[in-house]
Image (cartoon, rainbow, N blue to C red):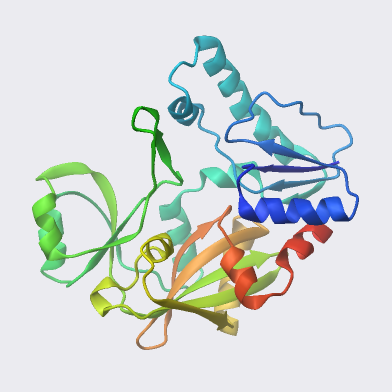
Length: 300
């Protein structure tokens, strides 16, 4: 039995499942986003892919405002059951524990292993932002946590986190004091590099924005949503960058993940972040190297 812990609506998961079914391999999808009361057994499990996991039981309350205390108790149980699969002596892609990763700690780990990272700050007031703008023309604001979305049932809407360029003109929208936030110094990019690391190999593409430079380095989700001009091409990471990233993945005990980087105007690479459940469909559609089949074969 091959277990995939993911979302039933995840595109990459669906394509790997097609290959598993094509090869006649028994499998089960555990939808950690909605189908919480699913029959789960560890007997006969031969491989597990932790693709996407929502472990915070509080987050599930957003999906149904009528949850009872009993349901909350079950969600807490689910939160403890899924990480148990990390301990099974079977083939793994990823681990449940990786989905509670700390972005700031990973940035420090990357820097410790010799990778360039953007200058990073935690700020909670407008005065600190003004000080940063006295030294830098543009900043980047992004989430520090690993949450992927918030659903407001009363408004029937999802709220997704984005990476955005922050300009001095945006300060008028900021109160004097606010919750501690992750801010980085903007790096003028030649391209953003998106890489899938899987089973010791790197698969990379470069995303080149053709927008005005003041609007570059926006989250890819925004570029696609707003139909902005960008080009995606195959890319080969520098050998030394691969060596350093291997060390990072080894220290994280992680054999799968999508990581982002920036190539600046001087052709230097800066590491941005790792997402253990990152989307890699654009990597496959650009490189056309059968990543879904490779993952299915690894699980088999």
